Image (cartoon, rainbow, N blue to C red):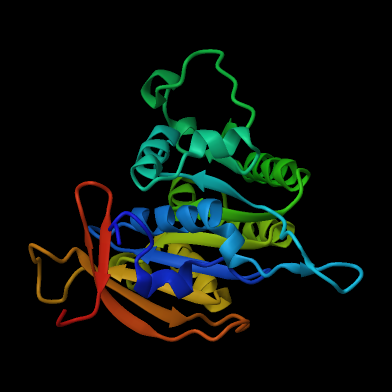
Length: 284
């Protein structure tokens, strides 16, 4: 099996999440969740028919075709060209999915950069891509809710993927921003089939809590873990670096309502230069 496809050991955890569920992917410096997000996109956009249970027909006979799955990706740390090119390397055509109404992108990084840096052409409008105007909560709420509602209007199930929400938190200076931001995420979860969050969980950010930002960051991460159905945590090897191992992926149940059996496991993974990834057990 190609290393660019879904690693067999992770298949049970990358299928379409149950309705209303929250999946949390955590990273540390040197162990990015990019490859996990790409595998979720691969499963949801290419293999969604296999992840869905067909609905019974009204007469109780043959089953009806399951509704399509669409994905709204909101990224605060990486721009659209990054995701487009990385997805292409694992066989996912985001441009094609966007034109079909099955993929949408909200650029949360571009509001901090001029258009020339993000590579966007002046005046270029792409219906399925939008850009946050500012980090004010009213703008964030309005833009993301509008994008979700636009995709939901096309029919089918919408899965919301928010990449590095903690970056948005780090740029804010409003009092009580963290708590209100969690409220915005809850509102969006109620409008979508399921939500996938990626967050930084480096120990100084979560355990320190000496500054206001550290306290709000810890509250954001801990509340997400408490509400999650499944948590996939990435970290570096405890023994240091290795030529053929990039890190460790640990799969655990979150504190949210358990809607499916979750087998807790820990695997090693190796991200390859061509975009592929190997996931394997210790000793293999």
